[in-house]
Length: 357
Image (cartoon, rainbow, N blue to C red; front, side):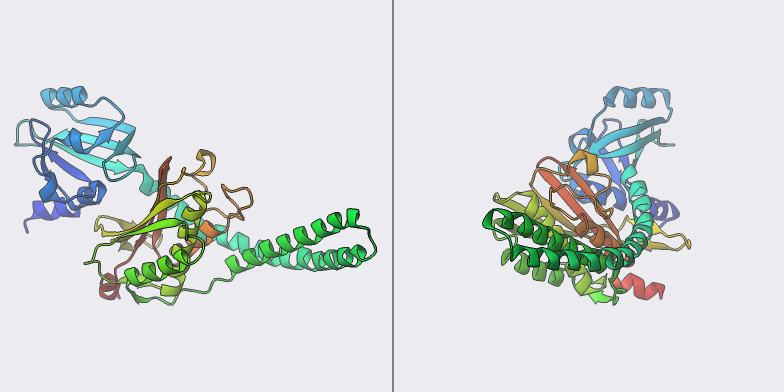
């Protein structure tokens, strides 16, 4: 491989080479992952048939080509036929030595948001752990006394007043249940990291969901059969997938719907942690539902503790999922529009981790 080819392949952002007619003349691996299609399938296709941008760019492209000048477009929504639009920055420049050809770099702002989000997950978890210890001591014991007193009081009351004591008992038990879930959130042990077949994990989660909370949903498998082994704790990953499936099922509000379990390989995603070591996260798991989507006011905080879009939700299921994936040195993100919500998990490949070790 030549130096130019190595640079092209190694670019961490999607890059597309365009001919004078704005047809795709080249595409790097990151762009294949972004567009969810192969280079072979995209070559020669008009770029504006494959990318949807919420800004009129054709004339700006022509001016940049005619003036042999670069073009920068910030904060535009870029989508494809396979994924929901995401906010991106576009950089377009003439290709030296090839008249009329342009190179376009797409920088999804989602990655920056996900980096900030994941860096905050562990600190949020520590806060929740401290809160759990305080709540367990300060609230659970008095609640037990309140519940017992209400039960004793109910023995001396008439039928009309029993409703009030029953309400005290039921609400006290609900609060205790919430506190126990907070404690569970803080007591997740370190993951037992080893090679894992993610399709086995997904199959276990699918069968469990279909026998329980997702019995009214259609669960569709869309797997990449060539996907290599991931690096993770199979039991904890199962817990994450079950939480995401339950979230998707409850979003349907009891109505029939479809949940798609999708896996694929995207070698472009690479994360650099605070210690300066870059880690590739090529194994992708997506849980896709056709529900109403996340409420816009909480879309950016769904992985924070106690944030929920449901009236009686605790807001701990997705926070727990984010904590587990963060402990795996992976990524978790969500893209949501009405009719399509995609939760995406990105994990390390087992073979890559072995090489680093």
